[in-house]
Amino acid sequence: MPSVFLDPRHNHARCAAETIAHAEKVCAAGAQRLTPIRRKVLQALAASHKPLGAYDIMGAVTGPRPAPITIYRALEFLIALGLVHRIASRNAFLACVNNHRTGALVAFLICEGCGAVGEAPGAAVSQSLTTAARSAGFTPKMSVVEITGLCAHCRGRTVKTSS
Image (cartoon, rainbow, N blue to C red; front, side):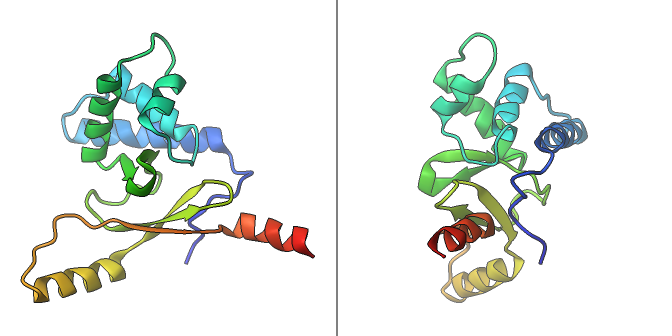
């Protein structure tokens, strides 16, 4: 399985640019508009692989400070298109860099050391959860899997400092 956490030394500018380019394609394909505020919110999230709260996003957006409701509306739009994820346990948001289909179950791996969040494919987990829910007569609408721990980079630092 490929790494779900990017190397801390990766070309982040290129990564952020690819996130915006993907968003433009998704919006064009769905006849939706990536308005200036939606773009700014996505850019703020793409500037880091760590989840940000709405007020953190407000502070990171360039230009006049937008109202909280404006940020939440932009986030709602971006989430609906699968361009942003909500990390429920942190009440924060994260730009989606994996370009998977909207509605696909993703397991969020949240590093307690550096705060980075990785997205692990969750197809097998999703199938198991859906089967269990349906056998109980339940129709699932949404599943969120969040797992906390240490990423390989932080685990490597922990091992080096304890040696």
